[in-house]
Length: 284
Image 1 (tube, rainbow, N blue to C red):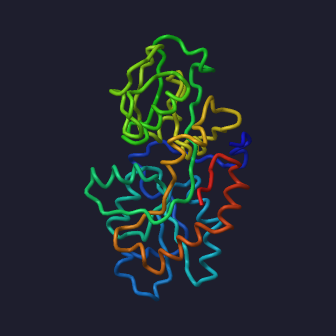
Image 2 (tube, rainbow, N blue to C red):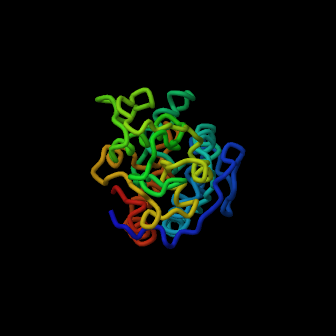
């Protein structure tokens, strides 16, 4: 993985995620439920995280769709719940912010009927310094912040294991929880926090495991700031690709297929590689 990522990113505020609603919307009307939209409905509304998802949509997808007669309306959210809720309720045609394990967990917990259409990119998860500058300097009993949602906590624990800080039970994999920690030589204290708020907690913990998009949003650089990142040949890289998601039954609609094709285009691949330089990696 390249080591000069994220130098061109503009940070955005990600605090107060649970209270956040729609932060910004590009011009264009809400298309409502895609299942009831007629074939002459040319507005495609997508719920997305601001970085990098909305950036990719606005800067590399919108013009492609415009050439086909579509208007792309991107609604930005900073949490991991509302984008799925509005997709399930038909307020948007699709969302683009999450990986498959999180989608599966959300469907199971919330009873939603959401399906992935295409895998688009992978965002390496990173370990970042808080009160302790290096992994070697971690003291006995140091505090490590990890996301509190099921799938991202497992990802954080796998990264800690990758760096030799803990050992998980055999087979724990992407369902790992703190109960699966079988070796913890430094007696690390695992502090579970809302994923979007972890960058704001860096000053209060020794190190933190941060989702790629939230690290970007907080202005953290893989090149300058990350103490460790997920290996490109890791279980995480194979599992946590970010996907385009719709409500089941809408995946074959003309609008969704046009959106999926644009997201898997050479233009999007080139934009990702040029803009994020390894912090966001195309998987198509």
